[in-house]
Each structure stands twice: as C-alpha cells, then as structure tokens.
Length: 277
Ligand code: FE
Ligand code: FE
Ligand code: ZN
Image 1 (cartoon, rainbow, N blue to C red):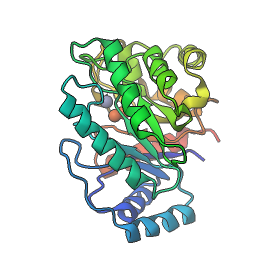
Image 2: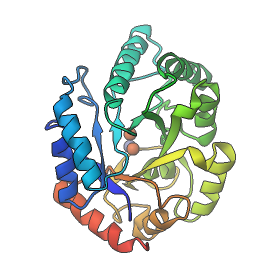
Image 3: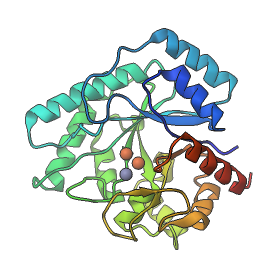
Image 4: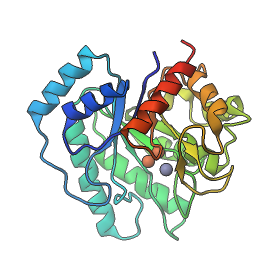
C-alpha cells in the first residue's frame, strides 16, 4: 500500500487533519507546527491528540510529518535568531512527543555570508543542544535546492551535520524531489545513480520520507518552485519510477504541490493507480 499524503492546514487540529487526509484517500499528512511565517504555536489539545491517535490506528495511518516554520534559521548569524530557533525547535519536539513515531522535518538553514562550515557548526550545536536520549520523534533534515546560501544543498553537507550530532540515531533525511532536481541530482535520468550516491555518502537507512513534488525549474537551476505532479520538469514518468523504486516504495510520500484539497485528491488517485504493489 502506497503511503501518501499532502501538506494540510493545521488550524483545526489533528483529528480534523486525519479526517481530511482520509477524505482524499491519504494515509499520512504533513502540517506546519505553527504559522510558517510567525512565532507562537497554539496550545496542544491533548484530547484532540488522543482522538487522532485512535483514528490513525483504525485507519492504518503511517508516520506523519511535522514541518518546522520557515522563520527558523538554525545557522543565522544573529545570536537572537538562533536562540529563538532553539526555543521553537524544543517546543515543537516536546509537542510531537505526544504523537507516536512522528517526524519533525526542518530546513537546515541559510548561512548568509558566514560560509557553510560556520553554518553547519551552528546546526550541529542546535541538534546537540535539543535532541535527548529517550525521545520518540525522529528529526529530519530536508534536502535543499541550494538557492541563496542554503545549507543542505548536497548529501555531503547533510552527512557532516549527521556526523557532528551525538544522538544521530534520532536523525534522518527527508528527500524533496523538487529540491534535489534543482540542486543538480538527476532523478529523472539517473534515479538509481542518485540513490547509490545517497547510500554511499549518508546511507539509505537514514532516508525516512519523501517530499514528492514536480518542479517549475530545469535541472540544476538552484531554485525552488514546486509544480503539480506531471506538469513540471520531472514529469509523471520519472515520478512513477520514484514511488515504485525498491528503496523508496515503503517510505511516506508527502505532496507539497500547488493544489487545493481536490487537486491533491486527484494527484493521490493518479499516484495510487501508478503504484505497482
Ligand atoms: Fe520544506
Ligand atoms: Fe519540501
Ligand atoms: Zn521547496
């Protein structure tokens, strides 16, 4: 069974997101832990969480993905931004600990003129300050397209972050198909080769989730604009190979394509039809 879902608005709570996902034939979903451009998170409704967990069990949902807000920059030059990031990061993880086996996906950040080494040092510090021994949540580093000074534009940078993190058994990677294409990994013509490279550098056991997006930009453009499935430079044929790849087919796939709920429903339908087992 294909594990697939899309990004949903979290404003109505977990049970509502679960029901919305089910209504479009999804069995997972992603949501922002708080307003992507703002700060404060809503108080966690434990009754809602409890109902969601029941619902997820009944409907065979797989791991859900919480996405950290974009305001977070773990490798900002300004210390107050790094401190603010750490506070949000800890608070988000504490909430997610109430939901079994969830993933917390974040963008490693932008080093803005400090250089990638300094950026990575700050990201590693954040992880070493916040991960704790018996946490249930797995923290995912997202592969980035390399626009501006983004860290995580290649597998080597992610590997360096993982290696620097003491509790790195709590870490994984979320591969965004739009981002890696734009970063210069040829998943259209050489998916096997890209995955071999991932395995050699990071290890495929670290790959925990896929952001399944088409892209508006050509290969290696170092941009980041998602397109609807089959309407961009990746195309439905390559995306079909991705969901059926022997190393990927068991992972949760999250759509972050420019769609309303009905558009996501259509994409999920097509992808389920193209999934071979
Ligand atoms: Fe993202
Ligand atoms: Fe993404
Ligand atoms: Zn993106």
